[in-house]
Length: 164
Image (cartoon, rainbow, N blue to C red; front, side, top):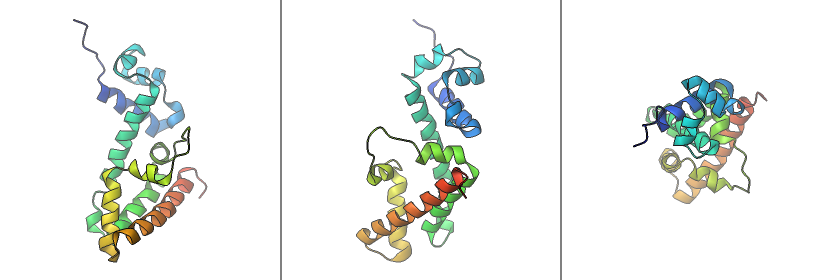
């Protein structure tokens, strides 16, 4: 029986997340992960098939962090405004995480709906909030959400890249 890996998927993903958070996505490498964990590169590739998979796991952790930041939206009125403010704030306070979550280049055209689908259940929460906050039908709520998301995303991206 082969020896059990010293570094679990979760430990490696957390190290990757921390590296990106502290130094940006360009600092993420097998060597940096290994240095942080005190191991060589081989345990990382025993658990992951490649760096794209490691980056995706770090992105999932960033999405969890973002969802935790917006989780108290019910304390605000209108509730959807809290999510928009958090997007911008995330761009200001966690620019590298913002870039990891929302500013990844794609090899092929990647439509708005695909971006929204990446948010998972947060998208549906936002639509429900917009419907309730503004007493809109779903079609109208989706349109308002898309417009407000684009605005909040744009402001967050400008903050994350130090444009403003």
